[in-house]
Length: 185
Image (cartoon, rainbow, N blue to C red; front, side):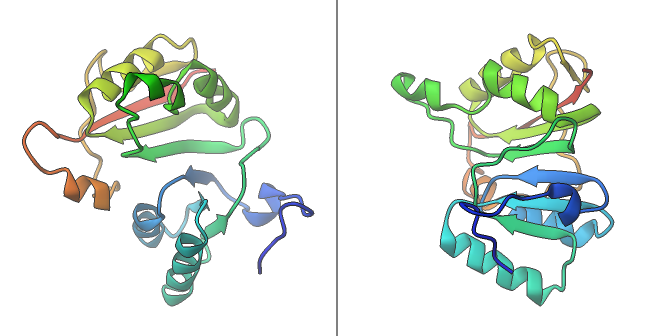
């Protein structure tokens, strides 16, 4: 079933009964996680119609009931998600585009309201300058605490699959670093 989001409102509580995770990417990594964690519900927010159709087909192929896909600008009520995952997002490496980077104070303020107390933010990137910026933004935010000793990066958890971008980046100087912080709000 497809919703016309210009007319319909989404009630996330009606979509899912249990805990929720949210993901923005082409859906491949989330699909693998949803297959391996059938007791947890996932929401994939996509922009591109082709990614949506491909992911819907794979969801049907694997008969997944714990993965929902929407094409929308996401807004949600406070304390609605237990985690947020961002794997290898665009680093916007040119200085004039740094303002487009997702992990900044204003976005972290929004996440601190959206993620439950002790919920986690899990970010992975292969861009050293961007990971340093993200680490600083997270460790300087009032509500987030590193699950490791500052400023130590986390090891890749076994549940995080290697993304297609990560496979492409396996070359010298492009190690993938994981940041896992918890919301102490």
